Image (cartoon, rainbow, N blue to C red; front, side, top):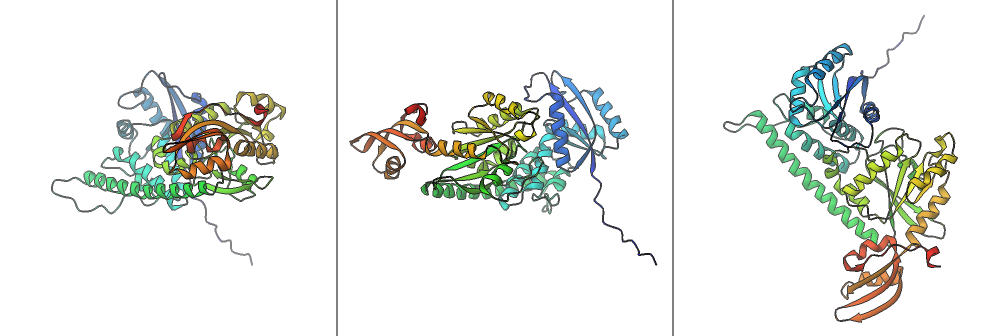
Length: 451
């Protein structure tokens, strides 16, 4: 008697997406039109979409109604029908009018999404902590509020966080006299936005207290920054012998993770793996993730991880630098780790590339190559690189005076009325704590230069 075969559950079919790339004459992009569209395809795959086709257009300026030309709209509509596409995905941010007109042109059976909406969806899938979910929800609500129409459904599909495509804005209350359902929806979303902002302020206050506690412990902090999928989590696992989730996928990790790393000689540092950056990072995300990004801005040292095997490595490096400038973190000392050298056909090629990046060294987080040199460089930057400093400190700031004596090298000191004038050198990682009292901020000197 033959055994009866029990049918196995199958995965739901992925939505079919058609990509649209637009190059505007006045826009300066780090990636070419083709490379940016290829990155959009990776983002779509990460979000669970199946890419079934693509098209591009170059324009002097966006069409005020449909962003792309009317002829291109008709062409895409035919291609979408031919490929059975359910989603038209634009590699850029559409304004509310563009989105409404395109949805009207393509019909009710086709959704129109832009790059920002896609990244928000990916973040919603990958946020696993309460803080991450709140940050993603805030970004989603602020993005979709001006895009609401009578038929809006995006938040119901995208909202939630923690992988949740369920949820969204539901359970609206009773309407007042003369109030439309759309007005009720908008009012409720504004209420939710205000609530989420209050929650994030609590998170921000908690992080500030935590950072102040860390500073009192005198343990320096290193923030790992880099383009998404550069290998930051793999590097943290290698340095801290930890098991942080790492995958060959865009935005595999979203919530920051901190691990203690011991250096030879008994010194240590706290390494924090932060969210990966990307070109055209939505401004709503930068604002919503302010509390998390402050971990970068308050770090003693940045470790910028670059996937040197990627054909657009320099463009990705520049995209990260632009985001660091946006969050005012470019003043922090930085070491550049050119990762994934094991993927290069000629590993010696990495050594030739080093000169293109500041404070750079070649490593392989996956194989462990270059780890000893990296640790030595990080340790030297945190504990051995000193900055000349001339400051005046009031006597009530006794903690800073004590810190200068403990961690720095006092060369002269003059006691005066109400405070003390100190000249000397301190580790570069501590300079930011004295910014308010600095007379000047000369360049750093290394031990080799001192000799």
